[in-house]
Image 1: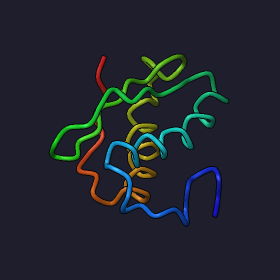
Image 2: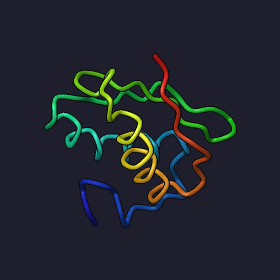
Image 3: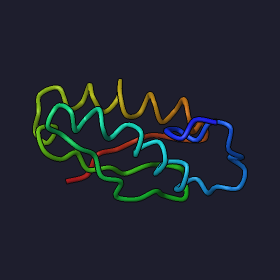
Image 4: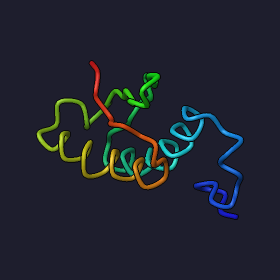
Length: 89
C-alpha cells in the first residue's frame, strides 16, 4: 500500500469528500513547489468539487490549464464518480 495516495486501502469505506481530500493532499505539494496551492472549499450532492486556487496559482494565466489538465484530470483518475471541478473566489 502506498502511504501517499492510499492505493490499496478500501475505498468503499470513504465518503466522496474524503476521497477528494486525500487526492488533493497528494496534488498539493506539486503546486506548492511552484508557489501555489489549492484549497478544497467543498463538494456538492451531484459530485461537483469546489476548490480555491491560492498563491501563485491565483490569477495565473495558466490557472485554467492547471485546473482542467492537472487537478481535475488527477481527481477523475482517482475518484471516477467526480462530475467536475470548479474554482471559486
